[in-house]
Length: 439
Ligand code: PMP
Image 1 (tube, helix red, strand yellow):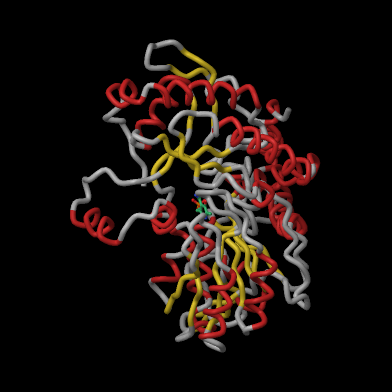
Image 2: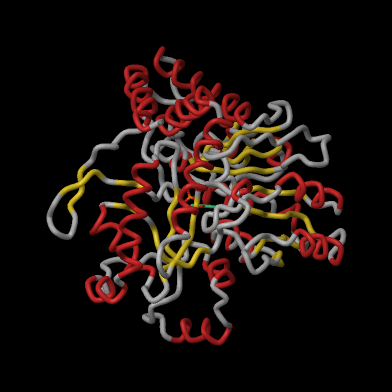
């Protein structure tokens, strides 16, 4: 339906037998292809491309104006009030969270950060190594326990300064009820950060007015997961948190006045963006936002949900399939994790690539504690993996759709998975040493 919107759709890739087939990209949770409109936008802007905030020439003025105005377009996309919030451009979600974890040093100090057992490492490690962190549990199906969240908030009343939670899991696609979580966090005096890396490209988000208990304090996301490569991510935060102190990176662009013995910092957001900004990254992001808005996020959600529902129904007929996240499709983005009983996840992923030209990811997807929970890996087994780091580790195979994927592609994958599920020994022997395993 939306196939023509993205670039690279007809790329041919070689199979094991040497025949070339059109690539089927089911790894959109890692990175999406670029919207053609994004590439067109970059080309269109290039005659005016120049320095941002660093020149008086016409092109520089056009570039600076585009860049400054882009913040409002991004804020508007998630309904953030520009009087309270600012959009800071960074490299990606990981950089945004690292920056925030540095900037909240005074606010959190000896307080507690609540992360969860379903986070990507990027929304766990920056907190874990700076602050006292506790983790909200997930149930056996991998859903976040709101009861446990409230228990931790109550138990540590007054001490929890931040709840850092993913908007949608990059392993199961489960969407968290971010506004319910926000209400709970605020009720107990905490703020909330939403990792929007998997949510923003697949769902409409309204972060709500700050006087609403359900509002989101901080949200972060990456352009490259929403059809906008070129290296831009966003940190959206209340302006006032940047008033005191200074950024994790300092230098050109972050200051108002510098003498040989004094510095007066620029106001946010400039204060937080050291060095020459990535203008093309921002051009790409804005084009992508405009395209998504034109399509309508509700339509995108509805279409991707149909893809997911169809896939899960078909997958249930595959011999030896193990599904981890086949419930409650209404509260899920288009990500499916599975295994084929008796086959290593890397073998299945390699067979999909070399027999079908289908790109997926396998392993633990930078969310190792979550996958360990989902697969019910015992503490003893985890100790074994620590001792012998060459051992093949458990994980899953992940399919993740973008709005341009279609039912025909899904049918190709389902047929291949049926063959794999029916011929475990054959595929085990053929691909027992896959070339690449990711963690
Ligand atoms: N959070 C989630 C939920 C993700 O899926 C990812 C990317 N896999 C990240 C954070 C990190 O994003 P980036 O690599 O763009 O920094």
